Image (cartoon, rainbow, N blue to C red; front, side, top):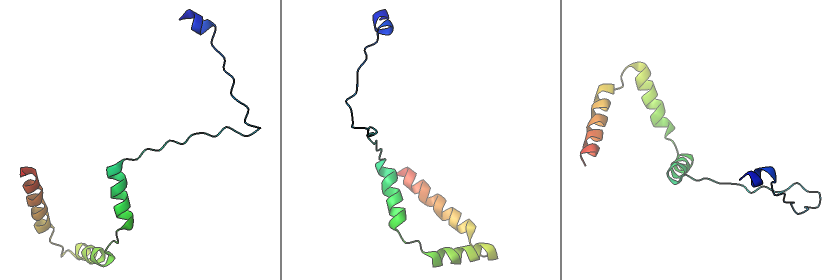
Length: 81
C-alpha cells in the first residue's frame, strides 16, 4: 500500500485538439414520480370546479364535515383491503 501512495501511477489523457473534454451526462428517472408529474402536466385542471369550491369555502357554505367523513371512510375501506 505504501508503494501506491508514495509512487502513484500517472496516466495521460489523449489530446482532444484544444477542446474541453465532454462530460457524460447522468440521468435518473423515478418512474412513479415522473409518471405522476407527466400526468399532472398533461391533465387539464377543472378551474371552474376549483373556483366554485373556493367560493363555497369563502362563503362558509362548503360541507367540510361531510367531505372529511367521506374521505375518512374511503381511506379506512382501502386499508381494510
